[in-house]
Amino acid sequence: MKNLDFKDQLLSLGLTRYEALVYLALLERQDTTPPQIAVRAAVPRQRIYDILASLIARGMCAEGHSGQRSVFRAVAPADALTALLDERERREEDERVRQRAQARSLADALTPIFHAGSDADDPMAYIEVIAQSQRIAERAYALAEKAEQEIRVCFKRPSIISDADNKRLVEGPLRRGVRYRAIYEKQMLADPESRELIRQCVEWGQQARCVDEVPVKLQLHDGGIALLSLQDSPGEAPRFTAIAVTNAGLTQMLGLAFEALWAQAEEIPDVSVHNDSDKDGE
Image 1 (spheres, rainbow, N blue to C red):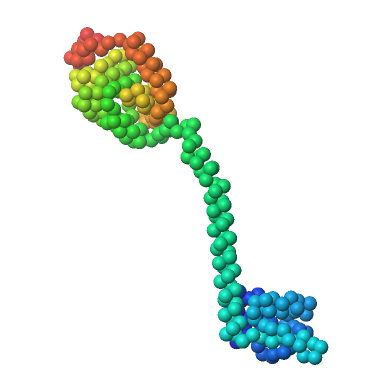
Image 2 (image 1 turned 90 degrees about the horizontal axis):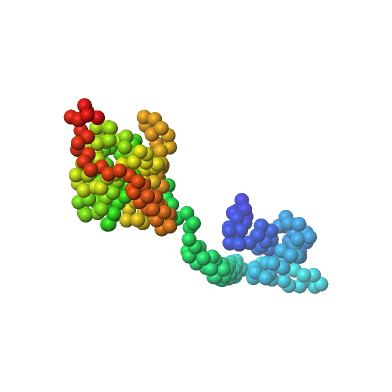
């Protein structure tokens, strides 16, 4: 049982199973011939010479002669195990050196790829898809807060946010002196809540016009960022997907489309005349 423990410990220090068995056999009987060692160690006789040669190279046994015969004896454990550890440390250091050299070589090979990837432009980096109404609203608020010169909007029902939130979305930029133009659908003028929304925005300074149909919800901020809100499904609880665009050419084209629609749109000179008290005249 002890020999089994010794064998496992020798294995943990780097010996092979056959080397450990042969070394233990040599410790028990010195100046032994290879066939005798093979029998005592229970290793294949055809492997014994290779095993002994490996142990000699590792400083764990020595070869001598008795008459015409080659005999082998174990090196004292203190010296043998010190030599074994030294050898193991050399192998580990050689492996560390090899790995460091490999890492440097690999880094040299991968660096150009890294730089090329850093310099490459993502062809779709100028488009962001926003799928949830709350996130669309948050993005619209953030863009409105950053606007410095002008906001242009094409507005139609249904709205992604409440009219109270729509008013706040308009009021902030107007109070900062941002020019704000909006194109509404004519049918909104027939709805009291929509008229009130438009009236309040115009009172704050929004320039408003109307057309028969607004093709798509659109917000243009300073001509550099566009937010298009697309209705996924009709119904009482419509879903929207928004696309935020920062490509200069595309936002410029959307700006031209807005200006063309603005030129065709009708003025809304006084939304306040369209109130509930005027229903008889409508």
